[in-house]
Each structure stands twice: as C-alpha cells, then as structure tokens.
Amino acid sequence: MSAGERIASWPVLRQLRGDHLGLGPAVQSPRSKGSASLSLVTSPAREQKVKYRRPHGTEWEELSLTEAMDRIADRVIATRAATWPGA
Image (cartoon, rainbow, N blue to C red):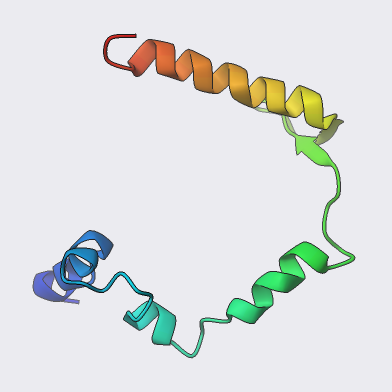
C-alpha cells in the first residue's frame, strides 16, 4: 500500500471528505457481517459474569458487577486527576 493510499484510507480523512454515513469501503466489504453482532449478545456460549485477571496473573477470577464497576471508576478518576488539564 502506497503512502497516498494509506492516507486516503485514514478514517478521519474519510470523514472530512463526507464519508461519515457508513458508505465507506469497510461497510461495503463482503466480510462485514453486521448480523453476526446479534450472536455476540444472544449466544448461549456468551460469558455472563465479570472476569478479571490480575497483572502478571495466569488465572481469571470472577468479580461482582459492583466491584468491577468500582474498579473501572477508580481508574478513570485517577487517570483524569493525573492527566486532565486544570484538574
């Protein structure tokens, strides 16, 4: 792929050119299967519990949804405090 082709396929440039209505090459590709998304939610093989793997851990452990959401919120707040201008 040439540099020009790579730049032309850049999503931001495609949006600036007006290709923001889902009419781009990715959507027109025969490999795009939007109907398969339903099976991600309704499949009986779908995980129903929150799983967490500690840093450098090898095993998954189950967390309650409340504990998982609290951990995510704590990380978002800490990142915002450390990086947000004027915080």
